[in-house]
Image (tube, rainbow, N blue to C red):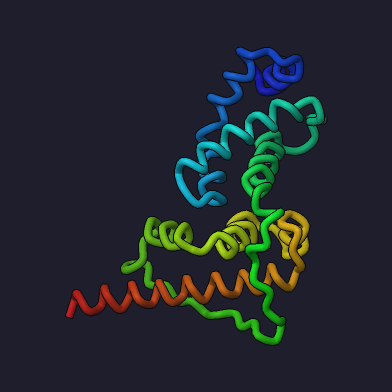
Length: 180
């Protein structure tokens, strides 16, 4: 069955079509949930909530643009929803921001290590970092999504980068020390 036909059936609340849509896209949307969740269990819950929202709003999809992109946007919004009401973001003045330069030695720092340290960031920093660096949102879009100022978005990104830089440098020092 083609995706357009599957979408039409889901719009008619066909349970079998919904199940098929879930099976087609859950493995693609779960990593998105993981990026914006503090645990594996929370990511699973967010995925379920996202699909409930997708099924609820699928009648609003107008076959314009990427359907997968539309679902990803809903998934990100669903995962971030609980953080919007919390004031977990640290406000820092623009003059305090410095963009750290990070040099990564590909031989000593793996992608798995990078994903691990991103996941270990405090939630407020991880969310802004993921939205900006990994998903390509602007600070204006992030501020709207998280209900924070653009300055807060920029400061949390800067703090995330500083933490990541420190962890990468520490890992590289450990690797060098082992080889000496």
